[in-house]
Length: 123
Image (cartoon, rainbow, N blue to C red):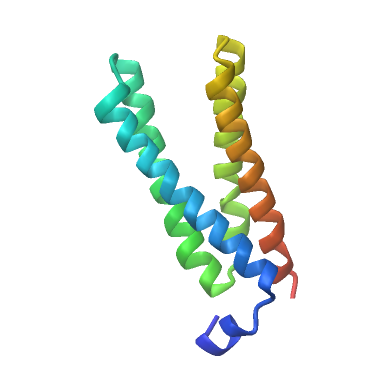
């Protein structure tokens, strides 16, 4: 997308794009905080590094791919939705309802943003 076509995007697409970019950045920052302040085992450090990596990858896909309007970006960002939902379900099965609710609500926000952005890729 050029600067002119970016301005002609519907408001819902811009909101969805903003939600996904913000959520991706927050996921990477959450992984960073988890690594330095909470991760007390090797497994938790590995999970936090994975969260940082997926957050940064989703941020690049959302930032570059969505700005250019490429269809692959819309398909690739589903990894973010799936990761958040999987983390939420894993924590639910582990018995940690508070963290589970957090990740499942983030998955819901990511899904909402994803569906808002879809409208911009159908044309």
